[in-house]
Amino acid sequence: MKILWDLDGTILDTWPTLVEAFTIIAEKDLPYEEVLPHLKYGSAYEYYGVDKNRVKAFREVERTLHHDRKPLFPYVKDVLSGADFNVLVTHRNRRSTEELLDHWDLNKYFVEVICPADDGYSLKPDIHAYQYLHERYQLDLAVGDQKTDLIPAKKIGLMTCSFQEQNEYADHLINCYSEFPYKLK
Image (tube, rainbow, N blue to C red):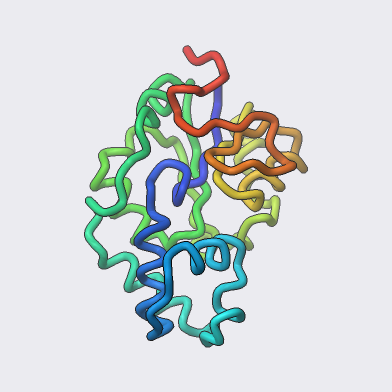
């Protein structure tokens, strides 16, 4: 199986540090449960009145939070190592992505990593990065925790697996990688 992955919230449990970084740049004491859905679905800056020009500062603050606070989800390495190969598309910048992949010894699992902002692609759900990877590698499946990860996969004809979140673009939903429903090598 040839798998296209998202990183944040899919391979690594980064939502707690992403929310923390957002509250720091928002300069507000905000509850995690309130911020999370707004941050996940792209409405946090507008909802909390934070200037969208602060995105770079947000990314830098989050990057500096210790990587041990961004753990791997259980059994995800089993799926990564059992795949024929993996590719990754993440909204993180290249520096942050490489630091996390190095920290968790994940580089060996990916034949290609795309960071749209650094690699000349539009952010998901734009299909162009997915389309390029599918044409190059003939992918079978996309795994992500948000519909923006799965929309482009469906548009190019891939099967989809949603991690820990039900959505209409998912062929399968899993809450733990021990439930991974596909045959691996």
